[in-house]
Length: 479
Image 1 (cartoon, one colour):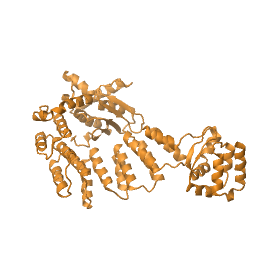
Image 2 (cartoon, rainbow, N blue to C red; image 1 turned 60 degrees about the vertical axis):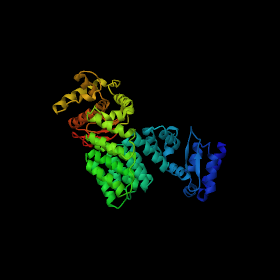
Image 3 (tube, rainbow, N blue to C red; image 1 turned 180 degrees about the vertical axis):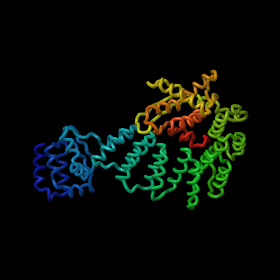
């Protein structure tokens, strides 16, 4: 079969100037599965561009075989360009082995959530001129956002701009969301400003994500800009607006938007709206007013409403819940479990520019450099006290003396993660921490001061995303 293929390939080369689509397809199919170096060299040396490019429009082709395994499942035009670029020729000449990356491998990495491997595969496929379609790029965006992998996200975005241009508004929206999920507001805003057109999802993403990242004033500005264009907001958009008002501590503006929602836009409030409003009122310490609001609700408050109020009571140190405890008694057991889980919560840290992820739990000593981590934190604590820091020991849920409670707070997972990032990442680089529960109020105070001491931006992605920089937090202490 090999000799026969070689014979046909040589014959084809002699008449390549008159090669037709049928001739090209037939020859390549004949060589499929037994493609030696000689056959390939004959094919690549032919003037086949017109026939191969025509074939591109009509069929997909699987070319396999040769040394080890040549798996190239793309169109014939891609195959021709690949050989003309010399990628496989160089590989054959230098090592005798062929590239083993395929679109199937890319799909597998995406399914398994292996971001680094998937993006490296994308770059290899790009060099080999193998087209990666929109759906695969969207899948890559999804896993980059989920893993908070900013550097990989930028690679995927760059690939999309180069190979899928012009991007549709829906694709731009996915890029926008990906950057927000990675905690990079600069990249997200750059994408927003460069978009040729917006749809409702674009505005919704901007409003919700700016709030989530702690930029409430910008979120309100975007909402105002949206309305001034004569566009009609939906119910979900107002939840973002209530969140922004909560962060700004502006109950009056929040209630005005609530009235406008039904009066001007005919939107019937849902339970989700009431949960947001309770959080808005209670988050700044107006607990009695929040309770009164709940009692006047036109519908029976659900578990989320009561849990929201109870969380605010805990944050503001109101342990005497009184009637609220009686009304929400069914939640107390669940809330206790939540507190226990919070003590054991897990964080991951991914210093900018690094792909390795470190995980921490409260009181964790499993890291090989745990001694160094705790020494650094104790040193920072002394500097923090000089800057006015007083530990809020009521958040150390242990029956021990005050000094012991300070040590418990010192060992909270968010601080361990930040300390690890401080000596394992380049100087002045941003440290990103992913936390699966609400940030501890004492740690919130501590991280503001730490950001000032070390001169770094600390991004903590918890229930809300907090950007600590120069002693301040983007949430303006409303969380």
